[in-house]
Picture (cartoon, one colour):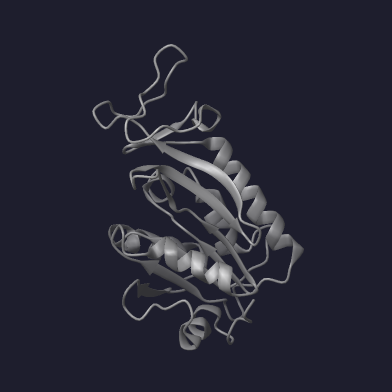
Length: 220
């Protein structure tokens, strides 16, 4: 595959709250041929963030990916007797990701990573997709090799899944690390980088042609 024309890879970036996940959700819900793993934040009825879910499209299969722990008590692996407290909002007990992978104010659920990865793989193997969206790759993947790191590698190499045009979402501070990862896994391919709010409209025909490298996606 590396000797022929490589499917395009696009890095989508923006500061927290810029609308990266909203962009991905709109793209996945509005167009055919988009297989997506989107990770929007979870908020309670007062707008307080209490975690992150992983949604797999098409179908919107949902996996409770991470939950916020007490910011005054750094996340750590917790025992049944001594668990971190949930202070921003209450999460259903069955969704608490224990044992979890700590990062910043969150505990991430290995089971949710596995479930979302398996769900996306299954959709890709069914065929009929023209674009893959992976939101969001962060320090867990690029610095620690955990989370969706294995999935990212498979998508970039076409290992066990079709090699398709790919959009990967990342925060600005990690663009350089992701760009290097793409070059390494795709034999030197340099990805395009698009900033949310810089003409990145998921309904734009021109942008869709850029993302797929072959024309517009069909409307749902």
